[in-house]
Each structure stands twice: as C-alpha cells, then as structure tokens.
Amino acid sequence: MIYLLLCVWFGLATGLVGRIRGSSFFIWLVIGAVVPVIGLVMALLFRSDKDEVRRQCPTCGNLIKLHDQMCMRCGTDLDFPDFAVEAESAAAQR
Ligand SMILES: [Zn+2]
Image 1 (cartoon, protein in one colour):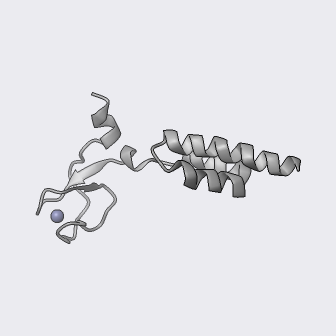
Image 2: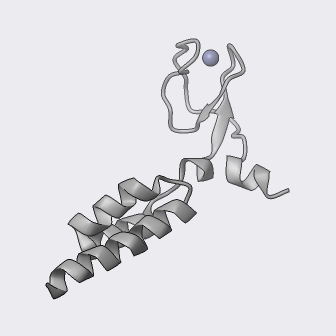
C-alpha cells in the first residue's frame, strides 16, 4: 500500500517535471509511476527538444536539429555544419 502511494506521488512529481521541461505530463506521469525513482531522475535529465541547437538546411533553408543527418523536408544529406543556429528556448528568452 505504501509502495502504491509512493508510485502515485513519484508519478505526479515526474509528470510535473516533464511538463515544466516542455514534454507531456501524462507520459512522464506513467513513467514516474512505473519506475518511481528512476523515472523522476530521467525526467530531470531529459533534454527538451527546444533546448537543442539547430542549423539551417543549405538547400531549402529549413531549420533542423544539429545532430540530424538528413533534412526532413528536402532530404539533403548534411555534413556537420560550420555554424549553428541558437536553440529555440534561447531565442524565445529575448
Ligand atoms: Zn532541406
């Protein structure tokens, strides 16, 4: 019974952390409830997509994640770029 309460509590805490990080509250709630302590740690370490550094596709100008190997819009194969575009979260802070 105490374990069940612990799962619910950790589920809610993990869900809230996930929500703050710009992810789904419900997904993190489930993760936190299934693997209580580990789930919370995962949510705390989880990097939001919005914190990812981006770059611009040289062919179509689409903004994509820095680590992407291929442009999702035009399919151009990409080398590692000379410069990167700041993360979405950093741009939003101005
Ligand atoms: Zn492209």
